[in-house]
Length: 79
Image 1 (cartoon, rainbow, N blue to C red):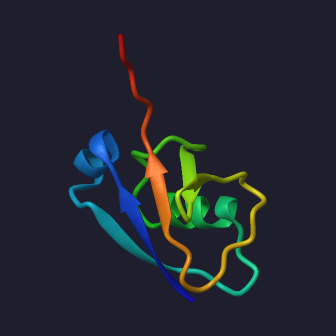
Image 2 (image 1 turned 180 degrees about the vertical axis):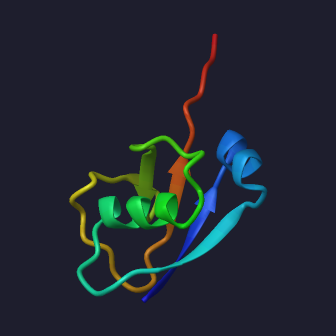
């Protein structure tokens, strides 16, 4: 299945785009997806960025499904 991964702020800047289409197999997890992105030449991402699936933070063992909205959330600072 192909998932569109949304990138924000510093991640979008580092990869030069706001979204990526990533091919993963059935039963792929969030961790599998992040590993696939990093292995695809996007190793500027940290090994374990914060991930949201369908607008909720997701654990790395969450299984992904067709149609899931995935976003990589960079660290933020505020004050």
